[in-house]
Image: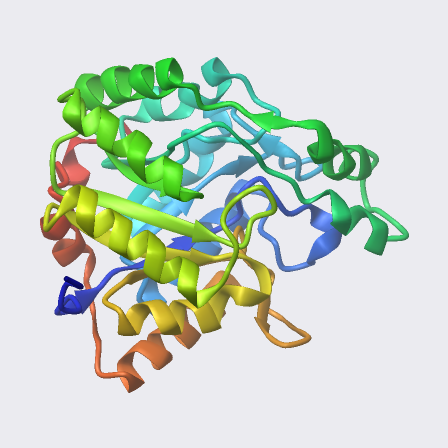
Length: 313
């Protein structure tokens, strides 16, 4: 049976990510100052959770350097009450040691956790770009054709133990296909994951499940069967599928995730000028549908988080 829509909808904003490159949008935040400014604006627009990556401020390439994170995490913390969610996925080119360095140092309330190894590719985009701003971008994008994004059972167990049990961090469980939900169920059965679970179902990534409404329903039904009432469900639609898929999912009771990590656009042929613009748009849609938007405090309560006062930044 489908759960009744939540009283309050959590909006997550993924501010910069490691997928898109500087050439793809002039609005993608690259420096710590830009990441902080766009994150704070997104929170002010209604995002209760900020999903954060870092980039090399010189050329915009994805970075796992904790010192770069340290330049923007305290700024965001001091300016807003949003839940700060630090990636443990980093990028497909990073080792697990690199990916874990920032969250293990800063012990955030939340971190993302990818629930399975997969092909994760954006290589077709390279054929559409004739001139790149930086030398690293084209080989980075083309190289995703031959990259496996590694998240083995041992990797996942280590993250759950070292970051979850060791730091009191809870997770945004990123599930790119039906099998990832079963992987999560395995760790629940093993006693390494306790409710409430925040399950982020992701649609439209090349290598993952497609962005079809039937697939959204399948993921929802599977999660209901596996997790019952012990989870909060969120949906991410990649690229051009972002707003339409989130609208559909919200009617089914989903929380939502937007941000320039997931899509560079605000509408057909219209580049998003900021993360906050996407937050404002989905918030308007949600409120028109009769939903209320969760505050950071309400998100913390729903997800059983330890509180912003217990982080290490």
